[in-house]
Structures are given as C-alpha cells and as structure tokens.
Length: 298
Ligand code: BT5
View 1 (cartoon, rainbow, N blue to C red):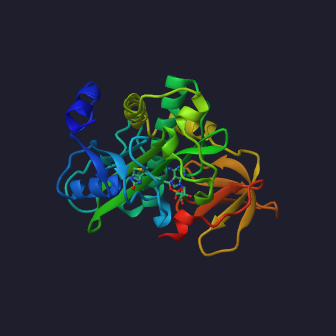
View 2: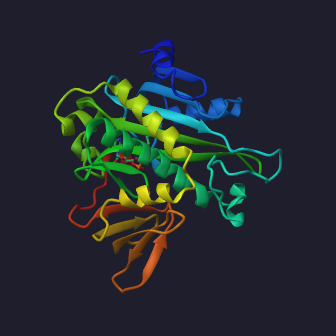
C-alpha cells in the first residue's frame, strides 16, 4: 500500500487529504502534528506499522506490520472565528442544547461521543461487511465474542482556550500477528480473521469503516446515534469490576448510558452512579485483574 493507491481506494469518500506511512510512531501523534500545521477537517493518517501506538492513559497499543489497521482522522470544529465560540464539532442536523455549544469548556461532553463514533464505525463495518456481532466495551473497545478486536482513542488539541481539533484514532486487529501475546493484554484479544475463519482485505475494511464513520458523523446528535451506541453496549445487566485511576476497584451492574454517554451503574449499595470517560477501566467479574507487560513497559 502507498498514499496514491489508498487515495484511489478511498476516492469515493468525502475525506480530506491522506498520508500513508509504512512505519510511524503513532498515527494520533502524526495527525496532531498535521492538524497543528493546518490539516483540514477529515484529513487521514494511516500506518501499516506503529512503533509507539498509544491507548488511553499512556498505555501501549500494539500494531506490528502487515496485519492491522491503524489510522487517525483530524476532526475540526466548525469554528465561527476566534475565542471560545466553538461550534459543535458535530456537523449534525439536530443541534445540541445551548449549554453544550461551548465545547471548549466541556470536553467531557463531546469526547465520549466522538470515541463512540469511532467504535460504532468499526461495529457497523464489521456487521455490514462480515455479519459479525460486535459490541462496545465502554468507553472505547470493540469486542467480538467478549474479546477485544479494536480500540479507539479520541484526543483534543487546543489552541489556548480554543478547541482546535479532535484526533480520532482507531486500531483494528485483522490478521494473526496483530494480536499481542496473551500475557501482555488486560482484555483477551482477537482479530477479524480469527472470528471470520477466512482472510480479510484490510484496506476494504478500512474503506467500509471510514464510510460508516462519515455516515454516523452526520447523525452524531441524533437519537438514532445514541440508540445505536446504547444497543451496542457490552456487559449490559452484568456485574463488572471498575478500576478508577488511583482508587480501589469498584463493582457495579452496567445499566446503560446517560444522555451524554457516561456509563450508568448500580453499585452494590443500590446507589446508581455515572462514570465519565477517561477515568475508568472496566472488566467482567469472571476475568481476573492483570498487570500487563505492555502497561509495565510505559
Ligand atoms: C485503546 O486503549 O484501546 C485505544 C487504542 C487506540 C489505538 C489507535 S491505533 C491508531 C491510533 N494511533 C495511536 O497511537 N493510537 C490509536 P486502551 O483502552 O487504553 O487499551 C490499551 C490496552 O489494550 C493495552 O494496555 C493492552 O492491554 C491492550 N492492547 C494493546 N494492543 C492491543 C491490540 N493490538 N489488541 C488488543 N489489545 C491490545
């Protein structure tokens, strides 16, 4: 694959410019640098291999060559000039409530939704192209058969007070080498070819994921988007362990999402609580906690 071939493959999609790399540290870092240098909305960075791929909270994301998808999109808010008047990054027909319009002040309101945009795009592509039944492990993992097949990392970049761009990074395991050794991952991992039992063209999967992403993006503020997100939620009704950074693990029953995409949980005390993205790590109660090599290497 190269930039020109990828441009040909994706020519029907209304994307911005794209850059393909055989090997890169992290596509999110490269997209952020490009955004800073003025990359327009929907610019795309794709790498065959990442040597410093990142997950949340500086965890590592494993992308060996020739076997996975690793890509990042630059999403620009529709800015109406300078200052904190940042219009929703969400070019959606339905508008957001007034208090949500100043996204620069409320990253917690839109990052979960954009993370879900990435995860839903992967789910839709897997469902429509391969008839798989993926689920979203809140907030950012895509599971098939309760094993992790993809991860999403949405990061905001700021120009002072102003939201400059959101970098939406997606990694999908496609062929066998893409899966880290079992001892190195916190959630059991899998790859598309394992669940399908046949070879898969990575670049066609990239195309259908981007097509799904563009389609969902135009409906980000719609009830349909929220419903699809909620319907895809893994472990609903089940009791899970939650590791909130810096605190003792919690146990809670997954109830669903609130309107902003925070996770609603019932605690053993009966109290219902919500958790925001970024602060928590979730696992089912039947899977023991692990300290992973990838995590320790950071
Ligand atoms: C994620 O973080 O799942 C977000 C991953 C986002 C990766 C994309 S690739 C393109 C773009 N460029 C980047 O640098 N990043 C994005 P988190 O929920 O924190 O999960 C990270 C954990 O997943 C690690 O600590 C490992 O336990 C596990 N892991 C690492 N690589 C994996 C893989 N290929 N498949 C399954 N699990 C993996």
